[in-house]
Amino acid sequence: MAALSKESAYHARTADAEGWVDYSETENQTWAHLFARQKELIENRASDEFLQGLEILKLPADRVAQVPEVNRALFAATQWQLQPVAAVIPFAEFFELLAQRKFPAATFIRRPEDIDYLQEPDIFHEIYGHCPMLTNPVFADFVQAYGKLGLAATPKERVYLARLFWFSVEFGLINTPRGLRTYGAGVLSSTSECTYALEDPRVERRPWDVMTVLRTPYRIDIMQPIYYVIDSYEQLFKAMDSQVMKQIHTAMEIGLFAPTYTAPQPATVVAPIKHDC
Ligand SMILES: [Fe+2]
Image (cartoon, rainbow, N blue to C red; front, side, top):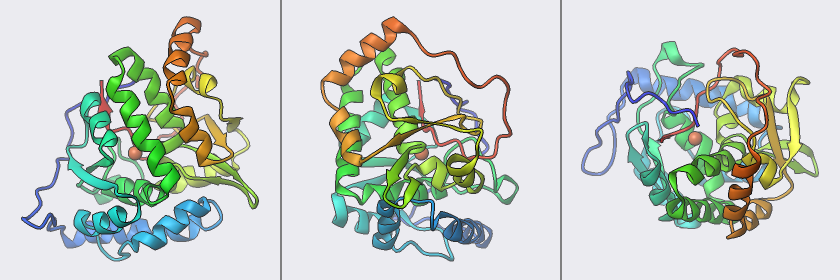
């Protein structure tokens, strides 16, 4: 997988004794701008479970959401919590946290000049993009089970496991009675990818199949050319059993599909990967 540079203009923010960060007026305005921009956009694009999660979390519209307040609602719903970390953490720490029902979250927010694109995940992506789905019991159990698998995996196996996370937690689509929707944090925290993923005719939308996902290469810095569509979150949870490691070994033997991206597309999304090899 592509690894992000550990050199970044952004750094983890220091919290006070209660876990609150003193965000500036500009930073709070950035959150408010992003929050308002996504609100109308996601109405007929986000999955019902994501929208229900937003109602449960009751995120502030006018300032950066703070980890302690999000954690109270998240823990009450599914016993998950956010764990503040630097933007990029080692794979081992990433899986360890997920296995403990702790979602690693960067606490900085993008600068105004980076409003539409940032290579690292910021707190808007982490909280607005990820936390609503973590209030859903089945999805919450799926992410923990994924973390446990990753914890026991070798570095090479983890690279394959990363594709399951990428094409579900970050960029997943779901069939619903009201049509195609998204539950992916990378899609739902991005203005341009939200419409692109669901409506652009150039996009390939494939039915979720573990072996196919495992063999699909991706780039973190482009609009995704391929998305995978599930029928239910149970489908994801059920895939997290011992069979998946066997499937990874088979995928290693067969090899990856040829990339469908031939040239860089405009980078207009927040790259949501937060683990480094
Ligand atoms: Fe993410």
